[in-house]
Image 1: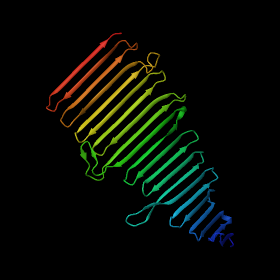
Image 2 (image 1 turned 135 degrees about the vertical axis):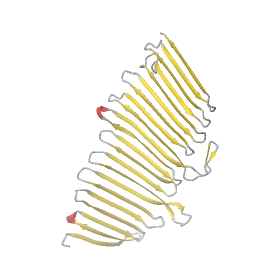
Image 3 (image 1 turned 90 degrees about the vertical axis):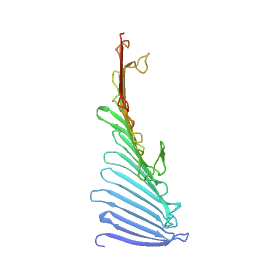
Image 4 (image 1 turned 30 degrees about the vertical axis):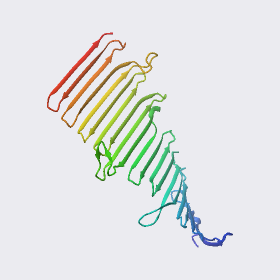
Length: 348
């Protein structure tokens, strides 16, 4: 036509007797092309490609087999003048399983994507959707500065879900971090038992999260580690754990941790904390000479009892002189109270 568009249709028969037909459209001045085809075996296919107003080049391809299997596949790819590229492929295939109510054959779909953006960051992604087992996915990225991360996730037909993510982060002045994270949720089943208790309610869930991180200086020296855990078992039990380790440049180390928890069935609550400090390692003390430590435990239960225990221990720079202190407090269910204090000191 006057706009320079071309179109046409072709038909034929392959040597094996399969008839085919195809159509095409070419908008020459607009940089657009489209093709589609089908054959007597039940297969259809298509292709589209062109250039958008912002200069982006793109292309799509797809194939569908309309047989008893109902298999579908496709492909998408593109690039632009900024140096970005991408590609996507997918496929859906039948399973040897059928819906009990409708008789429909169940399917499994999966695909993947990958590309590079204008900053040179590489990325990839894959996923699946299975009507028997559930869903899953993974994704990762790698930046030009060396930072990278990977993520996995999934869910099943019972409604349980989970996710994990980890990577390396590049910071200023050459500092880097190795980190990770996990979380999940699981539905409690009717009749599930925990500590003599049986779940009779729908909708209760068990949850958990975990995270950790290691920090490295520019010279590769490990400077700090940190981690946390948190959970809930769905029966009213909850807990949180945290710990840190600090490594000084002169070789001294400090460690501390804490735990808290709660149990609804017995109305128990507790918290524990502790820490320590050590001198740089030497030939006599590969882990470093012990300098000081401390700890504290406190809690209560359903019988009205409460308690708080504290103790600490420390040594001088030569490891000879030192001290110990211990305090204990108890409140019994009948209201009576007991206090204990003790200590010790010695010279080098």
